[in-house]
Length: 196
Image 1 (cartoon, rainbow, N blue to C red):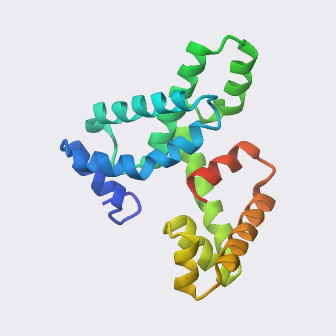
Image 2: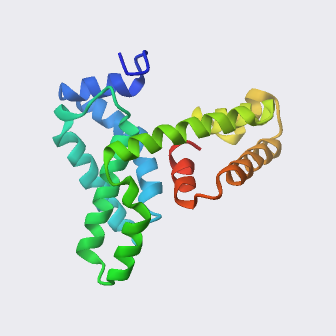
């Protein structure tokens, strides 16, 4: 059981991963690599650097598979490793100490798994609360898009809407998120990547 009292997909995948199941590893890669890419590309200049970082990240996950705590959020675990690898990248490649110091300042509070996990849980609560505030149809569209992974066309068919209407609902939902959370820019970027 996970700490939330139910068996999640990640929980099952991690349990299999701990038993050296390469298919479980591939599934975790498929699920999380787009999120990692979208996050790291915002911090690194070159796509090749992002690809190198992602390779190192998933090699680390494979090598540490026996140590992963399946009861904690894998999302927070993978994000923490990503931040540490980005720091490592800057230390190696960036000559301008001011850039390193500014980036380190902006992200320092998220440097440990414990502090990130607390913020992650806070973001999850905020995200769910904001979603609940959306008008019913907009909420339906948003959940099908961001949480179920349906395309705009699929949502339009499912809800009997025009594709343009679906796009409008999504744009308005994102504007609402920005309005509610715009005071903390870095955290809002995390919210966009991991929840919306």
